[in-house]
Length: 223
Image 1 (cartoon, rainbow, N blue to C red):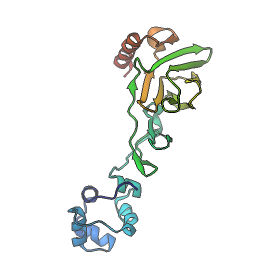
Image 2: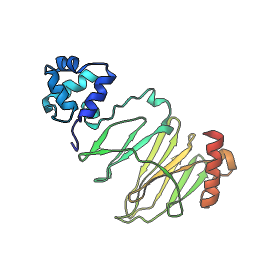
Image 3: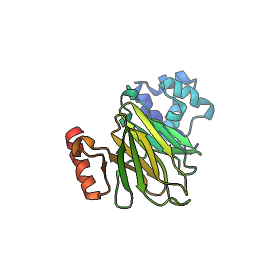
Image 4: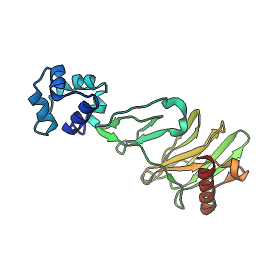
């Protein structure tokens, strides 16, 4: 646990529930002065109260500690909204189709923010029959490598885990794939849209400027 519940979090959750300090105190079998101390930062709730506090607010203890309340509605509607959480300590990868509170090695993880591919992270995508062959031009050393490549379509995720000394390549069933992502252990997450519906070709993306132009067109036409 890398942080503890704050008074600001308790106050915000209490106000969302439209409870007074006295009403919250009554539910937790403490005094209203105790709740006031928590919210003013002059004290902390005992660890034995965390589960009860979370239950009153209708959230998990993890959400209470993180200060982030997860509210996912119909998260299974579109895999293209996927989020990836990567642990900086062990490299563990956690996939979620919605908001989540994720901890690994005592660290609260934030979802990785994907950037467009660039000159130092070139990607090559080729359609071969019913598959995409994907290759990333990148070092694959123990200290600097691509750790995974993933293909996203509206209803599924395909992922290939990569390892140092191997090749930064993967094959995916086309299956409506709209986006390819890969993760560099130093520079983070990168994304490339599969724009067959724009350029009519299935072998592309080695040319950075042309790829960027197509991706911008895709954003305008298809959101």
